[in-house]
Image 1 (cartoon, helix red, strand yellow):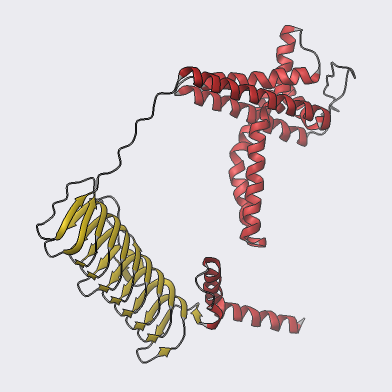
Image 2 (cartoon, one colour; image 1 turned 45 degrees about the horizontal axis):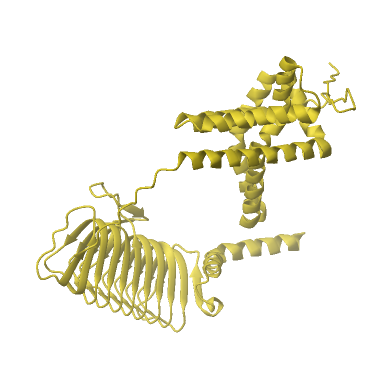
Length: 446
């Protein structure tokens, strides 16, 4: 036992030291970033990671920490995740960064893929830039800074006047201020964008609010799309094109005859499906049907209240079971548990007219004296519920709501009947007539 305790303490200490590396490696495997992750240098789990200015890593570097500072040289790719990431050194390969705040002041000799709340690019990128940043996408609304440790990060994307991009730049997010130099094409999709820099190729600006400064220059075509007026200074681009948003086509009015025939055909298919399910249910597994109907017939108000309460608690119970499955067996089992529970609820919702149909059919039989047989009674009740809901659904606006209330009433009764019948096992179905007019009675020990 003592040896087991020592092993447990050692493994716990190792997990505490390496958990950042394990999490980072897991993310790399899930996203398929690279096939050589095991050969790279991996660091993670600490509050601060710093690569000194005189340090050189002759390999890829993967790092996860609260704050990451790259002041040295990475002779390979850099993949970093944290609250705040700052690159002041040199990266000879690609850079992939996900953080609350990103400052790229150094040199990236290949592509840069950046995702963060606030991104400031003041360095050099040898090839393409892909940036997704924060900021309010609705012009005029205030943008709140992001607290990251002891820092305050301003949301949005900024390409300062010192920033250079050797390839194309794709910038999306809430707010953008682009005053750097881009040798290739520029594409933006933002709420607010300001262009004041140099673009060697074409510039496609898509935003609600676009500002083109006189200092900006576009070597190709400047295309813009905005819901607001965009003044373009003279001489900014050789050609300027305003892209008009696509006009929504007016949907043709439906043919009322075709609409009615389509509704009738779906209703017929629904009736046939219910009839087949009812026949199978009565012949193969009648116990659940009889016990549920017995509980509803004995105390319909109490059963309805139980059903409403259980239906209201279902989302909380399902969430708790999914969370427990994830904690004990992992996310795959949690997803499978969610799929099974959700599927069971959906099936019960659609099959609820069968569980409550026998009770409704018996009420109709008591007033007509023309309905005999369990299957016939069940079909009459189930079809009555479904057809009434279908007829109400044709009414514009309120009809769909009324149909949903009818199904909800059926669902609550079915759920409550199942709950009460399981709590009171003494209520059992009894065959009164073994012939075609099978009925049942409630036998209780009370």
